[in-house]
Length: 90
Length: 90
Image (cartoon, rainbow over all chains, first blue to last red; front, side, top):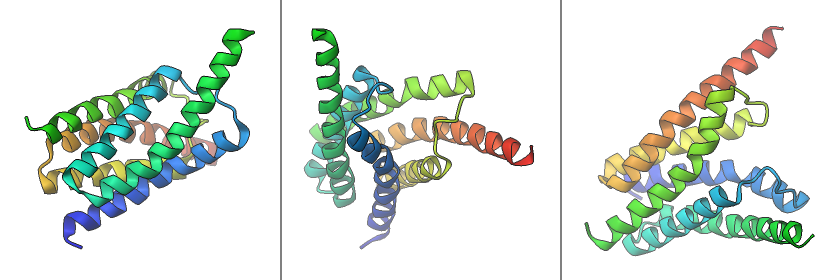
């Protein structure tokens, strides 16, 4: 790996790693009241585009960091949308 | 701008934009009880390294997205550390 790849790999571990406990908590408790639907939709769309950017430019640290995050963020967003729909129906 | 630069620019607006309301709320209220010191330190270090990665590889969308986020995350981390130090002294 060259210098940029090492920096990117460590950055990926840190930013994706810092997201894991929050994701684990939401997935375990299904508690999404504190999450803003608009902001989380923006975040998930943004992470998806960073993944596309990484694939487009073939940068592994960007691909792996955002692939892990997009799966977790997508699951959390699904739980949030279901909760919003349930509340709307009541 | 080429395709990758457009995708990166939109991704940057979305992920940094999704972070702004939370940052604004913490900076306005100084309420950091819900923030984990360990996780937020990891996040700030990670964003700093993504900024270094962007500068190293001269990718503007990565530089700008992470430069904005690192300033806000650094301010929030400072507020959190001060709150922890105050609690420790009491």
